[in-house]
Amino acid sequence: MKKIIIQSQLGSYPIHIGYKTVLKHVSSVLTSLRLGPHFVIITSPTLSHLYGYKLRRHFSSSVKVDQILISDQEKDKNMDTVQKIISRLIKLKAHRKTCLVAFGGGVIGDITGFVASIYMRGVPFIAFPTTLLSQVDSSIGGKCGVNTQEGKNLVGSFYPPRAVFSECSFLKTLPQKHYRSGLAEVIKYAVIDNQKLWTILHAHPSQILKRIPSVLEKVITSCVLTKKKFIEEDEKDFSKRQILNFGHTIGHALEAHAAYRGITHGEAIAQGMYTATDLSLQRKLCRPKTAGGIRSLLKKYGFQKQPLPPNISSTIARDKKRENKAISWILIEELGKPQRVSIPQEVF
Image 1 (cartoon, one colour):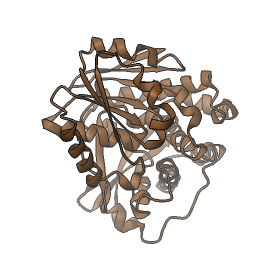
Image 2 (tube, helix red, strand yellow):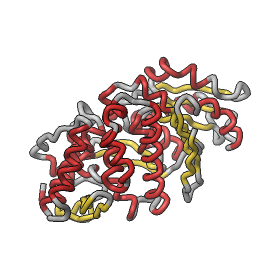
Image 3 (cartoon, one colour):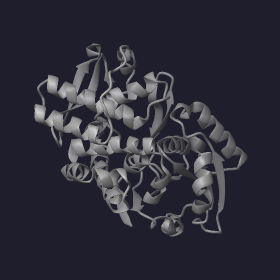
Image 4 (tube, one colour):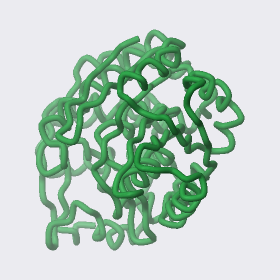
């Protein structure tokens, strides 16, 4: 098992990564962090059925463990679900020392973190990410929030967990569509700042797609170390951390345009990376060889370029990264050399 410490202004926290090695350390870690004696697991019915008992038996017998079941669909990542959780927490008599447990993918993690940040003005939470996307990206960095009809993650907080437990064996039961969704974020890290990861992705596509544990653990660890570097320098997303938004300007717009139905986050981000790569080439920031390499890697993992909806510009205009009448884009000069560029929104 690997342990990576994320240094946060709001409180540093460990990320534990391993294959069939992580859960056995849960009780001792929680004791060392002085969390408890009340835990509330927030998860989906499916995950509760698959792994609920397995997770709960790794908590100490001396603590109380409750559970709240919610939808893990992006369309349900909203204030209605937040209100449902808060009402249930009140009925469970959750207090300031109650620790929330996010057990699921990015949707569960985002909602749980947001509720933790506002319930009784802040209670602790820990995360057990169960998707590749959440293990390499959304569980790290303290961003949490919910969607509105107008856009993705327009309501939220910066509120880091007290600990993250990334058990790679949870990925065995993840549907291939959602596993590939996480691979889009992995590709993003390789493009913006990780030559080693770029090499691994090119050299081992079959092993990665087959979820071979030894390779998968290396990929997840490499992604976490890359994200660690960015968020520790710019935790609140004012400068360098924005580079992690490569592919997200169009990606978030596509998700909102589809009302968070029928398209995974990774599929949307992949299209965003295609668009950002095209813009980089059009603006003569990068060479055709660089753009070709990015497109080739996306195709290698099953992401084909799709046409953008004709009215996508109105959705882009509501992006959080808007600055007056311009949108902040992350473009690419060459691999490992991204550039933040403001482009007038009327371009789209």
